[in-house]
Image (cartoon, rainbow, N blue to C red):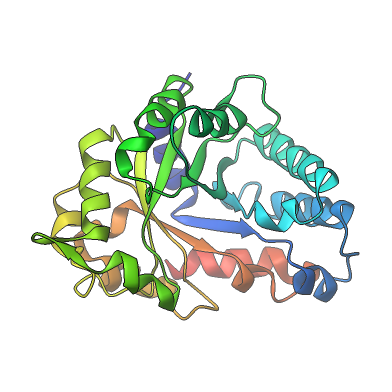
Amino acid sequence: MDSFTEKLKRATEQFGQLCVGIDPSESTLTDWGIPDTAEGARDFGYALISACEGRVGIIKPQVAFFERFGSSGIFALEEVLSAARETNLLVISDAKRGDIGSTMQGYAQAWFGDDSPLRSDALTVSPYLGPSSLVETIETARDVQGALFLLAATSNPESFELQKPKTGTLTTAARIVQFAQEFSRGDVGVVIGATVSLEEFGLADVLHSSPEVPILAPGFGVQGAKLSDVGSIFGPSAKRVICSVSRAATEGGPSAIVKVIDSLRSQI
């Protein structure tokens, strides 16, 4: 079985660095003329997977937009993930899980278990119970060629209160990147918003010295960052960036999705 690093390398070499988010929010489903139900969320996911096949190598389902429907929403997500696996898309499930001990292992089994219908290639996680609380989860993911992406510097304006303060010489965000580099074999990445100032968050140097750490970067498109600016935003780390786009990929509706995805790819 290929490692996550190998799968990511193959996806980006073949299709580029674009990652399409699957975010079946109420407003998006309404705009698409799809019922705001679990079945609607599933059908929206199917439509995006079909549009991505042969054009994009990576997708990022936003788990919360499925969870809002309860058990039927989770089942819809399972069906979307199954379709993505059949299409050989690399799946980063955006669930932002974070806990300690056996509870965190429960999350790991849900998202990386061999027989789990939620099985994904990677999972976003929160390190704010202490990065070391994720060590067992890193090992669980690695055992099945999976990966984790740790929230480091997020694009929401409230993030600076926790992520920007320093302990010693490093910001909290920089310490998370440093931790990821310590444990990564290309399978422990970080989430850094494309609208974040790397200098303000003390990230420019630590990212440059963390070559084993892939970067998942939301914030392109509607949130303001331009895909064509990925090089100027991330500098020498730009080649490791997974450029995530959600609303900008779908705002043209179902009839335009293929054309929009092709356009977004060409901008990187």
